[in-house]
Image 1 (cartoon, rainbow, N blue to C red):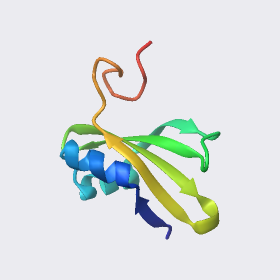
Image 2 (image 1 turned 30 degrees about the vertical axis):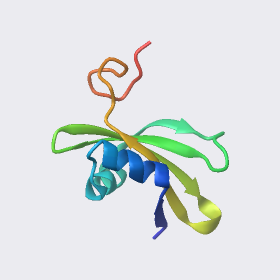
Image 3 (image 1 turned 135 degrees about the vertical axis):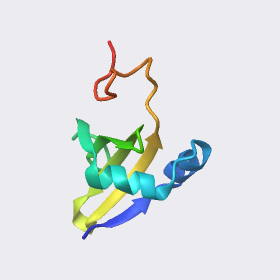
Image 4 (image 1 turned 90 degrees about the vertical axis):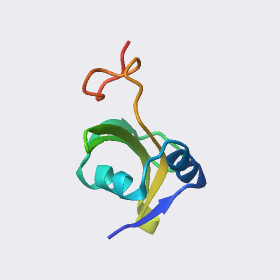
Amino acid sequence: MAKRTFRVHALQRMFQRRIAMPEVLEVLEGGEVIEEYQDDEPFPSNLVMGLVNGRPLHVVVAFNHAEEETIIVTVYEPNPREWSGDFRRRKP
């Protein structure tokens, strides 16, 4: 199993937005990849969307395959003005 690393930025945002670590892990384990960023540096990343107790959450996660590491970059509750009703697509 890959190790998980939470970036300081992710932890700060989780605290500010009142998002608990178990909620983030629930999104990572059962969420849906809604965007892929294969050209991200230093590692490719994905935007994962999940519902936790009815609350939509987005988690940006990068993958360091050489170290078998999953890196949680940031976490947020998507803004309904910027996302579709199911929070899976950005509004134009």
